[in-house]
Length: 403
Ligand code: C5P
Image (tube, rainbow, N blue to C red; front, top):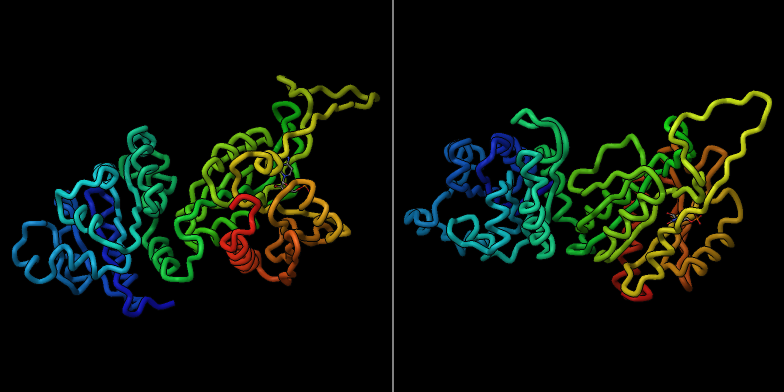
C-alpha cells in the first residue's frame, strides 16, 4: 500500500496521546504521504512543533496570526492543499469547538475552510468521553459527515480503564489508507449485528449457538473501509472491536432487538449477521436449577422477536440485508425468507459439516428480488468486502423498498 503524493493534514490537539502522533507521521511518511501538521496551542505543551517539523519535513503551524506562516501557506491554502484532515488526538475541547463551528484558531479555521473529508480520533478520560456534552458534540460531528475514528477501550494515561483511548498509530494509518480507496458508502450509516445470543436459563446456564461473530465483524470492518459510519451490535463473542467502529455489546435476543432498533433508527443499511436465538426460556430462574435425578426436565420456550422483520415493518426503514445459515436447500429457503421477511438481500451460506461456523473461510450465495450471485469460498474478510461492494451497488441503485 502506498500513499504516494497523497496530502494529509494532521491536526494535533492538547492531549497526552499527542506523543503517539510522532509515530503516525513517521508511518504515513513511510508510505510516501505528504504530511503537514497544524497544532493547537494546547498541543505544544505535550510535543514541540520542532519534533513534528523534523518528522514531517514541513513547517508546522500553530497560530492563525503567524505572519510568516500565512505568507508561506495561509490557512485557506492549507485547507485547499489537504486531501484529508485528520485531527488526532481530538480533545473534548476541540470536538466541542468543531461542533459549534468556531474559527478562533488555525485548526478550527482550516476545518471550516476545507472541502476535504475530515476525521477526528478522540482521546480523553473515559468519564469525559461518556459525558452527555461530549456525546452530543460527537453526534453533531457525525451528522455532518465527519468521520469519528474510535476511541478504543483500555488502560488510560490517567489510570482509568474504559473507552476514550486514541486508536493506535498503525490503526489510524490503515484507516487513512482505506479512506483513499473506493468508498461507495462514505457518509452513510451502517448497522451490523454479529455473533450469537445467549438466552439465560438460570444464573449459570444458557441456550446459545455456535456463531463466532467473525463474519459480522468482517462486514463491519469492510463497511467502515467503504467509508460508512458503522455501529456493530455484538452478542457474546471473543473478538476485538474493529478500529473506527462503534460497538454495542448485548447478550440476549431481546437486548439485541432493542440495541439494533435504536441504532438503526436513522441508519441507511442494516446487515443482520447475528445468529439470533429464535426462542428463550419462558422463565429465567433466579437460582441455579437443581438436578432432580430420574425425572426429565421440561423447559418451556417463548419465541423471540424477529429483529430484521421488525425493521422491515417500520415506516422508514434502512436497506435490509439478512443472513441465512442453512444446512440444506439453500436456494428455496433463502428465496422464501427474502419474501417472508420483506427484506432487500439475503446472504445465504451452508453450515454444518465443518462449514460456516467457527471457521475462517466461507462462501455465500446472494439473493435479492429478481436476481442472485454466488461468491465462492474465500476468507471471511475478503468475502465481507465483496458482500459490502454488492450491498453498496444495490443500495445506491435505489433498489431498497424505501431507499
Ligand atoms: O429466520 P432465520 O433466523 O433463519 O433468519 C436469519 C436472518 O434473520 C439473519 O439475518 C438474522 O440476523 C435475522 N434474525 C433476526 N431476528 C431473529 C431471528 C433472525 O433478525 N429473531
